Length: 286
Length: 320
Image (cartoon, rainbow over all chains, first blue to last red):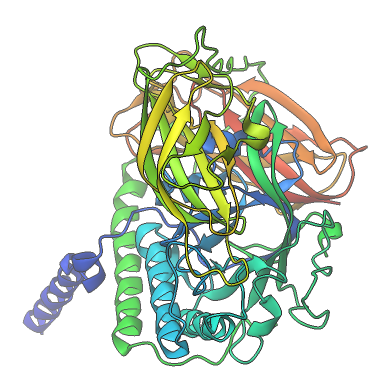
């Protein structure tokens, strides 16, 4: 009896050691950073900002106290990301979040065909769909592998930056619709992320991505100075109405807070931002 | 809200991997926490978070902000190296990133963005400097400026890019610097400067206290006219012990959309904990009297160590 108990103990200890020592596939192939930014989202109703090159932690520190800003739109990757991002890392996300900020993540991959951008997706809808899926997979890998977002970035919002294009040439609108659907489809595979699309409310045809699956939220650019996310030109008033809108309502300009000047776009959110919890700080954004 | 759309199946290995990963994380957590919990002997330096260093009300000293560089001479071509960076998309324009690095031994300044000409196209050769024409940028030794050149896209019948790879940049002092390897497409209109500013240079020797990473743990809501008690967890992210000598100050405060409400600078309770071990964590109690006159609603709580390159922490609390 005692021998059986000893064997059972040895087996249990051995199993424990084996499990602890066993490098999972993710560790073998994809060593992840040790910092765990929480997955998921909160519904944020507040003002925020974004800028081409993500601000460093000294700047975000200076811009937190005594300012109207509650979230930052961060550019995290993609072939068309306009600025290099020397600050971006898992540690950076954690430090900025620890300062109190909510975060939105932009992915800027290939743009519409015949748009003039250096990196473009195909005018063939089938190819564009697959390219949309590829971009989503790359964005997902960035979020959880490189930036260390916990739980496989489960329900973390990520926004595709699709700049304005001419939809009437090169089959660009049909290709863009197909591309966006590929983006959404891939992000919704388990473990899912929230799929957003950023662009000019009119020039990026945001309202045209409605047939299922449609984006979980939109981040529309309309530099009309009106913070209300309900006021988006070319977007039907009945679409994306359940805390699913973020609006970039002022374009690039300098602002100085606590002695630090940044060239920012001004945004208002009535939609998901990472990580939880919910936050309502500015009802003019509704 | 349809945040749970109809999902297709991602490969089964991923779900299995996630389960293994979660189980492994839990077991590793148990294995790591137990020795930590058993190893702390001094209550003031406990690293398991169960012991809280009490708050003391002692006036502290704000850290003097690092003065920004103010160069005494203009940059010349000999001072600068220009590197071609990313091509991309921003604000509806096709962009070209350029980095201007001061490799001189001392600081210099650019009185405005260098005036650029596209050197290999015949039409629309100028780059509009816009509001950056007179924006002064000071560059310490080794510091860089970020310059983004953009050009409109998406014009009717645009399918024949007019590309320029060469730029000629004239510095405010008159020196001319050639740039090669850029991609600027002027098919739909003239190029313009979209961004011009200095990239922050990391401090040369921030000191060991910059390795302390604070995190705020505050209640989600509080009432006006009461004392807000919250905790700041300070983690020593370095591999060496850090002495609190001299005892560091911190600043705590609250603000809302209308601006700052209150802010005060105090000393950490260094008599209860005079150092923090490598990888260790200390939890400090903090107190703040919430004015009865403040507005209800979402309020920012902020806390920062008053040391060079000191980290900060914050949270949002709902004031009733």
